[in-house]
Image (cartoon, rainbow, N blue to C red; front, side):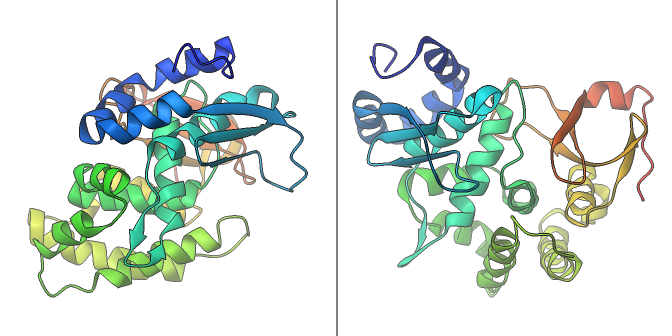
Length: 273
């Protein structure tokens, strides 16, 4: 892949950033991943579609010419799509998992966090705190959610998994619009709380990561550099060698700043409102 003439030198460098993820996914699905890497083509063009910065289909990544400093994030996002199968529940494609996971993984392996599908990603991160990352690796390599269902059924064999999926899908559909999502989040968290208590015998509110994701989803703000910001934890689920950071966004979800979890633990606190 690094000898691919359609990749710029910078894109090859960005691909190396993802090497740990690529190795992990390669071990689980070697033949198809080798095929993707060998056949991958990248092209820059003028994409005349509002809010569409890039796309992937059939080993072909298309990037908009006007990305500027956003190109790294968009390239990595589309490369993760290339390395992952489309995810289905029977015949229904679950785009919210595809986009949410690409957002999470892209951020974990990127020098500059992106702002795509942040709320969908937060919903999925809460689910990762419940069942771990393995079901999600399995989803990306098999193209189905059987492993996720199995992980939930191990906690409660009678639980209706579709209630979780429906909540994530609703947040995904609302991602590009301003909504008060508290009712949807409350329903989702109620289900997660029930399962988490059964599995770990403790409250989700003892889990600082989940608490942060709930606050982010509910659009609670913190004071950061004299501005009211949303803050979301990048918890390094897939990038085990990464740094756990808080990422701050303004009311339009534009990146404002980042701070390591360690510096926060060493005395920096925020007041939510």
